[in-house]
Length: 276
Image (cartoon, rainbow, N blue to C red):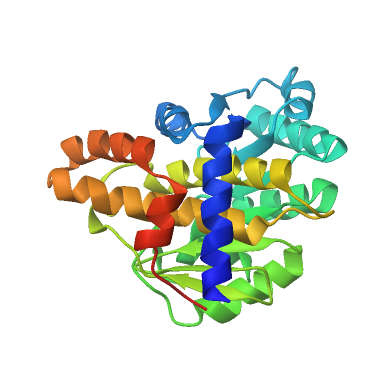
C-alpha cells in the first residue's frame, strides 16, 4: 500500500505544476507573504482574498480554498464562512488550518461551524491542535506543540471519522489519515521549527495539492489523502534540502522557498519515507 500511496502523491505534486491551480487563501496576517511566496514557488497561483464582500464569489472561481484561523477577526471569520459556502457550491476543496485551537477554544467552535455548513476536505494542524479538535487534552504553547504526542494516531483517526475528511497532524514525524488508512512520514527538518509560518506554509501547500487532486480525479471523489501526503512530503523534503544549504534561520527561510521551487514527484519517489 505504501508504494501506491507514494506514487499517487508524486502524481498529485506534479499535477500542481502542470495545472497551476488558483488557491484562495484566508490566512493570518503573520504569514500572508510566506504563504503567497511558497505557493508561487510550488507552481500554484495564490490569491489572498479575505474581503467579506468578495469572499463567496471569489471562492467559487478558485481551484481550492485555504482557511487559516490564526489572528482571526470577526470580519475574517465572516469572510471564511462566506468563502466556504461559495467553495462548497462550486465543488472546490476546502483546507482548514486550526491554528492555536489548542490554546484558544474559540478556534474549535469556528472549525466545527465551517464543517457543519460546508464540510472540510483536509484539516492540517500540529499534533496539539489535532488533539484539541478531537477532544483530547495535549500540552501546547501558544500556537505550537512540542514534538510527537502520545495517542495522536487514535485522535487523528477519530477526528477524520468525525469530520469525514483527511487529517494531517505535524510533529517530529507526521501523521496523515482518512479515518481508515493511516500514514506516518518520517522525513523531517528540525530547522522548520526555527522559522515563523512553516505550518501555515504547509497548509497553503495542502490547498494546492487538494486543488490538483480535484482537477485530475478519475472517479467521483478526489484523492485527498494523496493530496495531504504530497504536501507534507514536499515540505519535509524541501526542508531537508534547505538545511543542507543553510544552518541559520534567516538563510534557511530563503533556501526553503528555493527548495520548494525544485521539488518534483521524482523527489517524493526517491526520498520520501513513509510507513503505513
